[in-house]
Length: 349
Image (cartoon, rainbow, N blue to C red; front, side, top):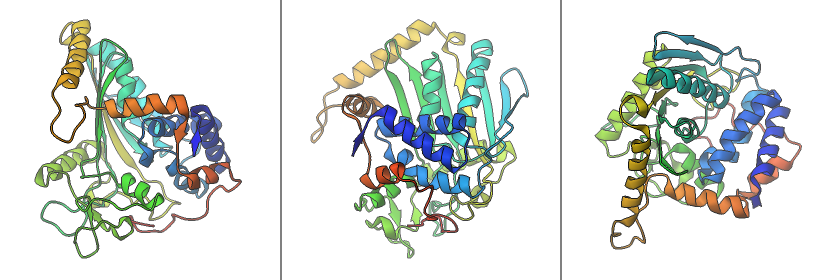
C-alpha cells in the first residue's frame, strides 16, 4: 500500500488523538513515525501506532505531562518528560540542546522519565539541520544476551549520529547495538518473512530464522557490541538516576504503567573547534570520496552512511510511502486498539 506523506501523518495523528493524546502531541509523534517510514525505517514507523494507542488508552503514557528543563551547568541540563510520549519530549530536549551548543559550543542533555521515542535519527538530524553535530542514545528493555551469556540483560540500546554537509545532504548513522533492531524482527513478522540466522536465538539459545521463535537478540560483533550497549545503558540510565540493565521496564509487560526510560543528547557546534564552513565542505568531500570508491565484488556502489535512506526518501516522496496493508487498514479503521500487546513477554507475537 502506498500513501502520501501528508495522508500518513494525518491518519497517525487522528488515531493517537482518538487514543487520548492531545492533538499537538499526536502530531508530534506522527512527525517522528512518518520520518521513519519515509526513510524506509518501517520498524519505527506506522506499524508502532497500535502499540502506542493501546498504551495511551490504558494509561501507560501521561497524556498531560508537565515537561521541565533544568540547566545544571553552562553545557549540561536535564529534561524531565513526566512520562509523556518520548517523541515529543526528545524533540523539545534536542531543541534546547541546540540552543545551548550555539552559545557554549557543546551541550549534553539528559532526557529522563519518557516513553518510547522512536527512531533516533530524527533527533540527531534536528541538530544537523541547525549546522551542528548531533549524537543521541537511549536505553531499552532487556532482550539481548550479553556476550557469553544465555539470559537477556541489556536492551538493543541504539546510538545515532548526524553531521551537516555543505549542501543539503546529512551524514547519518542510526544503529542498534545488536546485530539487528527488535523492530526489524517485528517488521519481518508483519510481512511473514524469515530473518538471517545471525540476528537472534530461540529459547534454547540456538540461532533461528523464524521471527516468531525469537527469544533473545545477539550483540553486534560479539564483545564489542556488548560493550557498546553497556555504555549506552550507563549514559542514558544510571547517569540519569533511572532503572538500568534488566531493571528497565518491558515494552509489553504492563501497558497501564509508566516506563521511566532515559535518553542522552550530545550536540557539538563545529564553530567552536574549526571553521564551520570548512567543516561542512569536508563532510561533503567525505561523502563524495566514499561514493567514488571502487565497489567490491557483488556491490554496485559505495554509499555514505544514511545515503540509502536518502534514496528511499526521494522515491517515497515522489510515489508515496509503502506501508504494510494490515497497518494501513488499522489506521483507517475506527478501532483504537485490539488489546494485542498488554502483558505479553518482550517477544510477544
